[in-house]
Image (cartoon, rainbow, N blue to C red; front, side, top):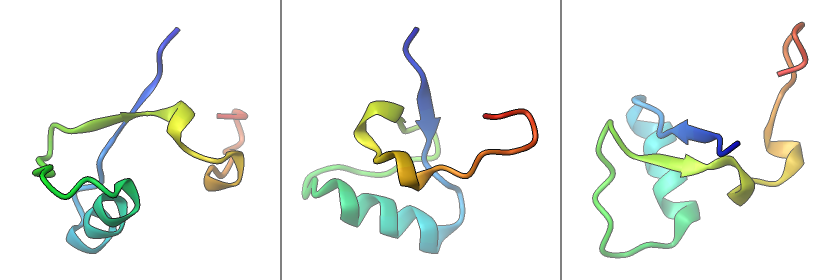
Length: 51
């Protein structure tokens, strides 16, 4: 199952994501998503449901 994460709407967080992606010609819209496999495991905080 492919899981994707939506890019944050918060402008500061969105800018940080785009910078980390290293895609110069990409426009970060509110509809952009990124496959979770492109993140290191320590990028995630587990909630009480283990997600």
